[in-house]
Image (cartoon, rainbow, N blue to C red; front, side, top):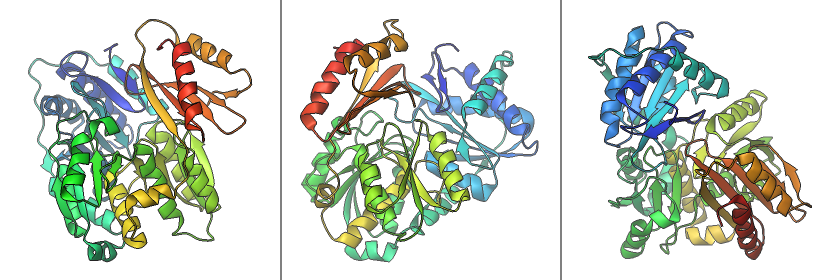
Length: 455
């Protein structure tokens, strides 16, 4: 249990080691109590990505969930955003996605969601979940999964229809885009192919065996397919399909930060003269701020973690503002569809941009603010405390303004910034550096890594 990575980003561990059938049963039991305390006659949803361990984790999790007698709806292999969206039409009080999202094999895990907000758990709810796990004894030796209702097709159909309602599908269809798709063999495969077909696209499937996270270094097969087939665009997802990365018509990866910048700029153009709030976290590119400034929109900054974005979006909408946003890891959030990251919504919005501008996506990228950025992960296995590492980094830059919105952030007079923070999902620290000057970014990253103990 102690080797699990547990936070408000969910539960993640090594399948068969820190994440066992017994662990899944305990978390299912605890989450069932959490749901029952809000609605004893609840409907609870379940879905999974394509990791092989998802099958046996599903059975154990369902056995725990079934102890409260809920109505259980199984979406099977389906994207996390589909599960989150379907909480609304199904009136579900709770939902669980079996996934480790962007983590590589052999990781797996759970994302827990609660209604009526239909968001992943916040820090307080996560603590309640953990306390329940600690109070839960050993599972019976022969626990069995309860019966469930199959809602896979219904959930996909409704989710895709809601996504399509957000864009001018006829304008996209008239262009007839050719799109290469790399879903990493994950939960987004079926939904993405169906979405693109309904948008009149010629689809080039890419059967890539790669790590879940759609980073540029993992997308060589997608880049090759775009060039070989003369595609207008390449799209890549992680295994649970909440993140979206793009490849240009030249077969060049554009970086996951670009996805959000382009989507935000497009959405801002829909609301001239209205109060608009763009919500992003502290680790996201400030190119989002630049495009928001062009349209007179406000930036609302949050800590890292999807629930923080979701809650901020809900507050802004309740106050009467138009609100949307997301994370620079390729996570676009459009509340009209759902309150979490949704790669399918991102794909539809990007295609609408291309259809309206009639420009190659590489030209659109060139028109956006150029703010070089570096992001790295640093293993945390040497016993040195994060606070000691923060102190080392802070001492390097005495003139920078330091604050602690999430880890340690240093802001420089020319607008450059450094963020060092612990990951919510892996035993690593994340280091982010951004500035207008690419040379400064490289030099500063080297200095931070050396002080941090990675150089």
